[in-house]
Image (cartoon, rainbow over all chains, first blue to last red; front, side, top):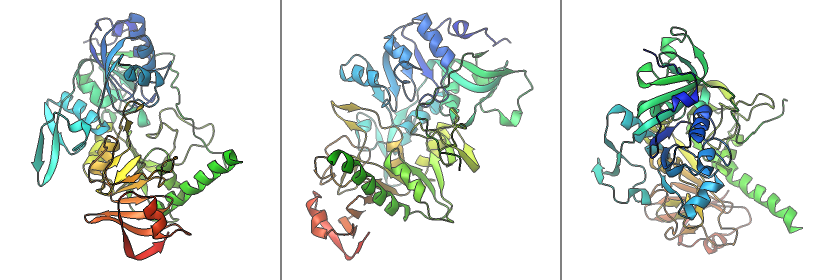
Length: 232
Length: 225
């Protein structure tokens, strides 16, 4: 078993035009910076991306967006990205907005072999259009379908050669679910460690879900809103 | 000097709103505060009370903004602001986070709104043709939190009511709002209509009614906020 690849370019070698790709992260926190850069270098087009946000102008997934590589995006919030807002209003990109809890559960379901589920979120709103509703214990619920992808691009803090992963603080977010929901899950880590170095009780994503892993480099880990207080 | 006094007035309005909402907090509450004005409620948690703040990006136990120089790009709230840990903080995935929210484990959700109507429906995520931002976690929060309080200014910047008979913008949730707190009033959403329970100092019930589209039921024990 050899899941270790030398770098991001080898890791995305078989990503194809028209692929559906999940990308971990919330805002710019916990995004796979190396893998996103590699996709931009590779120049694959007509991508369907599944990610909570689309980066910001000029960083993170904003790079894929400005390179015109995304045809359709499925996410929950795009308020930080003016370019995307323009492209949507001009009809240049298809944007499917999904409530965040429904989004995370659809991905979780996709990885867990659950084709659909019922949720109270979005009943009576545009989200409910063309969806089956059903009453349980006197309350209406919407049927939502699982989400899966051809590739999932994951960012973890530590990982071993088998693909066991640990995330750090709020950089975990959507990464664990996405790691389960793609045909090929690729993880970049800040620290690649030996098999056996991670505490088995502390592993967030067990290795079975990960197909390729590599040590990332040149992490910028940009902060979107730096809010601080003075030491008193 | 309207350009100078206006923001001050806005700050004053916001402070009044968030201070009133803070009085709805109870010891042991798990609370999700929305982006913007609702976040300020955290500054007014009564002394000695333990309120645990949840952030839907995967954190329970949000601390204050970090001391300058200790900010961590792996540690943000749902507004993408850097925050800090407290003793007892827990991190989890987005799926677990929304299990807490949708599963009814969050006692209180405070969020802003563009419109609220007399049936407790709320619109706060989209203006067709103008603004595409997305609903983020708002639809799940209003559907799943045990209690939903809307924090907003009573009228738009143009002076039009934001409390309407029926919302005109795309909805975030239907029949989900419990309480509306504005710079003018505290209003409870009930099955018989909107009940005006508290008004800001210096205002009359008629003042609030004039700034509100649907008919208000004035509480028999109307109080000043």
